[in-house]
Length: 240
Image (cartoon, rainbow, N blue to C red; front, side):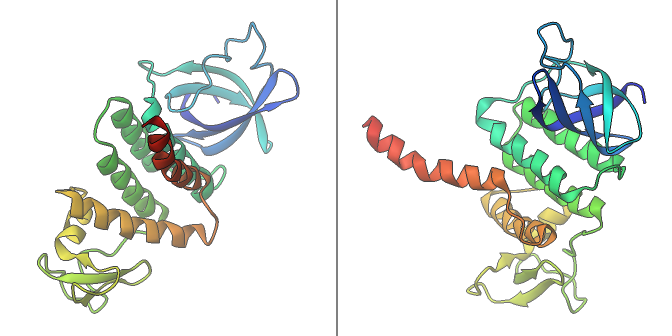
């Protein structure tokens, strides 16, 4: 296969100079590629196989791990700011854990590309992450029921609802644990996030839905982020 759009999701060294690369391609889904000699001092792949950069890749073979023949940057070179790296690793981990090898999902590829371009360009982080999560669930066949309750009634913007990942929203009172605002459900349905409450409710709904898809498997990126946040007050006290 020649010059297929792709992103590197993960890679690790193999022996002295080679790498095993997990790539997400537009036309062929997630692939494991063997990059022979990629760590060698004269390899053209050495500075090219980096995460968060759109690439064109060529490979050969039909086995579980195909041979990577070539990779080049597709379009402009991009770089994710250091404070956004964990968001990038989170997106990559979602694709690694929620997609199957050799299962094409071009719509997911374009959603990922759009989100990554926005993050690299400095656009607002939270709305882009929430938008990608919703589209990922939709495209995997786990789309959320947001416009109607579990009883088939239209969701009203001014009322409160309890949301179940497998059954949709059910009417409740504001004091109910985990209650989300009807307007937040409408915002998530439209992929428009108007204010902190809308983003907060969207994050709660999407996290519960993604966790259901993960079936108990933890996300390392989420664990690292929580650990970093736990350490922040300590660093602040040490700097005073």
